[in-house]
Image 1: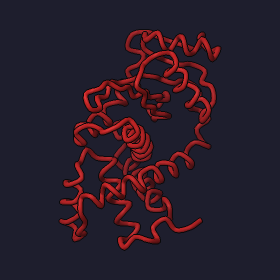
Image 2: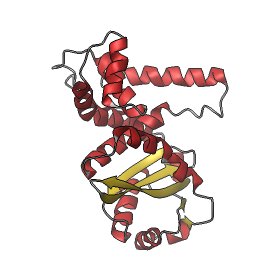
Image 3: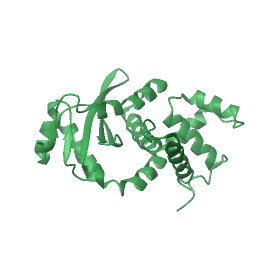
Image 4: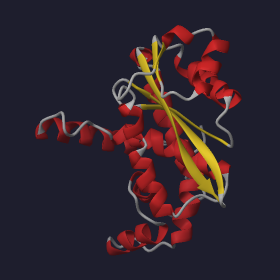
Length: 231
């Protein structure tokens, strides 16, 4: 495998830090530039934009590749939900599949919220993770119509408050969307949402459920693994 950093003057460590700060935290390009300047790293905000476009999807793919082989238990229960995203005044939809532990499995951006879009989203998620035993959704008819085509309509559950896990998983992305002041097109939305979901999964350690010592160990392990991405 060729070194992906071979034509860049900056070190891979600086590129990884810049990409992580921009995608993981609700920071603008210029805020990332200012934070790096304080640490003696003089780069332009357009360089940060170029780095995340070039390396963000690559880092996210490496994270998914390392995690998907050990995710057989993600087939137990899925939570599906969709949110509205405005792009140039037009309404688009971002679909999200979350497992029973809150880890984002798949995100998918579409222009419509009909049966065809739901079917494409479900097939995309099942191709990577297999068929789940239970699927929790809201009362959007598109889910039932798509699952009827697939043949797993009996797996669907639609009780009140049962899908809070999926709705809560939208919050980190919503905060990030506000810092970016929206998206320019649906391809950029899909690209960033996929990278954001994988990187959020990588650094999400259920801080409120673990002791301080366990959290610090998990955080150190995640940072060490992050430094090895695309090494």
